[in-house]
Length: 171
Image (cartoon, rainbow, N blue to C red):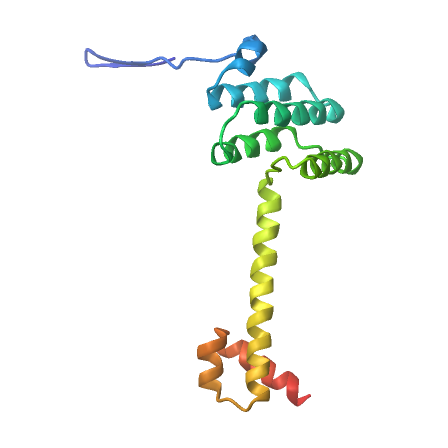
């Protein structure tokens, strides 16, 4: 609670507090409110204490239960990312077990949501692939004797990248 008084004025703010450990897990799990599910994931993380094995167990069960909710694919990613951030296993052995769980789900035709780290890695890979394609186009255009201006316009590489490519060909 915040209280400030001066010159016969009084300002008071009361902040409601929530004790995660006091919440009813069954009630949170049966809710159709995604915020309740976020609280449920937090409660699971709290209950797992520092046990990586228990965190993995909670995470896999939550993912299975999330599918049973019937929410659309668009409604799940933010909640999944939150659960994954709270409960993702740190040890290599348990990460491998988690990857196997996800691969099994993929084989069963179930949706496998990506964690934030996986999405970032995919985006980086995609950008790297696009950059390689652009350099390949520029290289082919150089082989065909096209002008630098034309290469820059169609390959979308920078002048610096084109200069490096030309220099590498001279060596």
